[in-house]
Amino acid sequence: MPTIRDYIQQKAQLVHEELDTYTSHLTDIPQPLLDSMRYSLLAGGKRIRPVLALATAEAFGVEAERILPFACAVEMIHTYSLIHDDLPSMDDDDYRRGKLTNHKVYGEAMAILAGDALLTEAFGLLADGATQAHLPVHTAMTIVREGADLAGARGMVGGQVSDLLAEDRQIALEDLQSIHKRKTGDLIAYSVRMGARVAGVSPGAMHFLSQFAYGIGLAFQIQDDILDVIGDQEKIGKRVGSDEANHKSTYPSLLGLEESKKKLHHCISQAKIALMNIPDCNPGRLMEIADYLMSRDR
Ligand code: GRG
Image 1 (cartoon, rainbow, N blue to C red):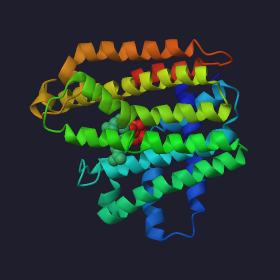
Image 2 (cartoon, protein in one colour):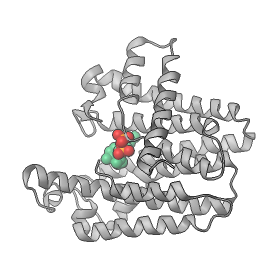
Image 3 (tube, rainbow, N blue to C red):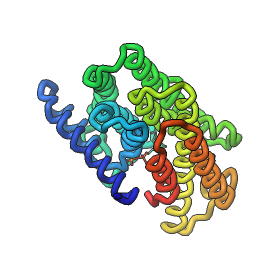
């Protein structure tokens, strides 16, 4: 049986190939737009969201082919959010996924439009996936509705806005948690929930799978904050308090590094416990992914 690292790599490769094939057939769109979309979409990235969609469906015996278009859709939504997050009007970043950011290569207008096109195309892929898998109409429509809710104003976009509004001031831990739940957790939850919907799980199972997803989503974000602190300390000898100096609230700045690590471990163990309550589910790979997220170094 492949190690979890190999398992994730194999699934990520599957998603990469599908995204490559799918977008290479988009021949009826302006070439610079296609280049800009493909530049970010195929730039690498951990592909953790589509891998979660595939692993969730697999835990209920669903073959990869049925869930793959949905998994690709969530990666398109994620990539759009990264392109827009990097824009001069947001984080103004020069590098992403080890390469120049989209706007640095294609210009700001094209980067905005490539993000818009990826988001819109994602909803097209959800429709294709539902058709190919012969999903019941209600299931298909629920997956689309949840996409709009979890990626949109109620979810990831809303979380990003709350994050912007909280810039330059310290916020309470519960506010930080609410921002992360929407900004990071909702798309991770969407990935798990779409896998579960295609598998046709019961509402009870969906409840526990959501608990799992939000648990690992929060852990993912805490780990991200911790990696930032460690990176800062290694690079320029900064201390944990540097985020406070930047007036940016993070888990390490609010709780300290050690408490943040404890919180991270707690989130992962609670997430794994949630999986133990689900009947007819083989949660082995999902549990391993949860542990893997905790140990990642990028
Ligand atoms: C602009 C609508 C809009 C939303 C932006 C995703 C996001 C919301 C912002 C990115 C900034 C950030 C650090 C968000 C926290 C979530 C996170 C760690 C995103 C990076 O995801 P990874 O690590 O990236 O999965 P890769 O490149 O591996 O896919």
